[in-house]
Image 1: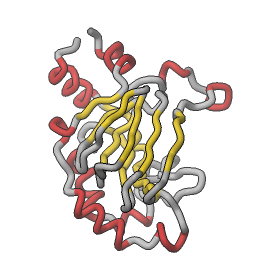
Image 2: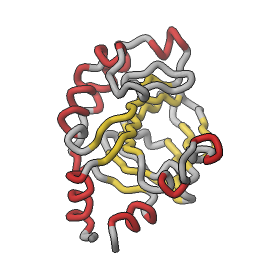
Image 3: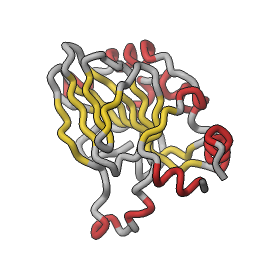
Image 4: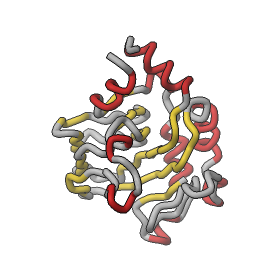
Length: 196
């Protein structure tokens, strides 16, 4: 199988062993130290710019935002473990409270307004790092039910339908990272999955 065929036909890939685990307790401690969720009643803190969210990484300038200073461990981990493989566009930490539900949807851009071809987006395109991994978390991706564990790192295609329900009594946090993957990353994936 060719690399491009692999990333177009794979919807969800656990790459934790390739990237290395993150200390989720340190990230959660940094999140708890930041008052964005309570003071601004937000569901996410971006380490980039999104319509209604504070950002840690600015999508337009590709620079860390003022919020990033409050996440020293998280930023250092990203720089050491992901930046060798990806030119970051944005990093977002998202929260889903107890009983929260994100209905089935996809993040496929509207081609008519995005000025892009859809086939360039409908492939593995987002790093997702699960920070809490509750047992009572219901997640589907492309009609498959998945189990997320705290610290696991996934490379996912968010253009495929996905849904999440937090049936637990605690907040669920994850981190989503977008960017451009470099040759070093592609070669690592090829070696690991024996693709051309």
